[in-house]
Length: 238
Image (tube, rainbow, N blue to C red; front, side):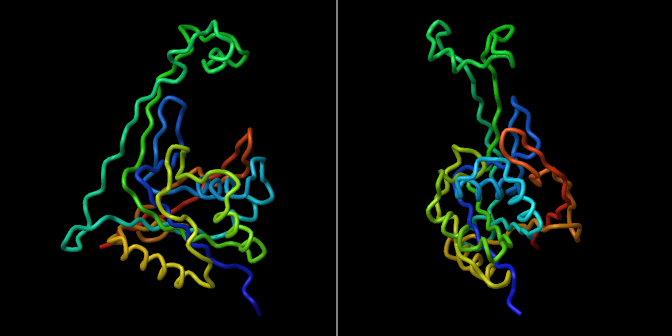
């Protein structure tokens, strides 16, 4: 009997990445690894899917996903210490002339379209991972594997690593495989070529390691986003 799923290898590499899961407007934090909602959002960008996507998400949320982080190594093959998160301070809505109809559109307002008390300028703090590399192996249904592979290689919308200013510096799609062992073998080859070493893994469910609860399983995208929780385990390499 033929297998009903395949395994897709995604390679996420860039100077900046940001994978938020519980951020408010003023402070945009990032996890130390990609979220399920971030990965499925990336696939939606590749497909050009901007609606709720409830049925597609329901199918994809039943698929397994594992993340591995790869650290840069020194001349002796030992991993470098992880770079601290970069904090970027930004002013939103500052410097615009509210008497100009077009510039006025860029100034934050209240929900009913009126001027905010004390002005519309907002201060935000945005955090980013620096010089990080992740490999993600996602289980995908056979009937979607070719479509997703083609979409990642010819995306409808730009692909980015969490936020739109986080540009990838390597091809994200790295192949379809019949099993996880083959996918991780390919990831290991890529890491070796880039002088990277496996640092830690994030696996589904509760296993030996640091167990974390994340609210990153998307039930619905679009204007009214909805999520549910999942448990993952962060496993540090020796």
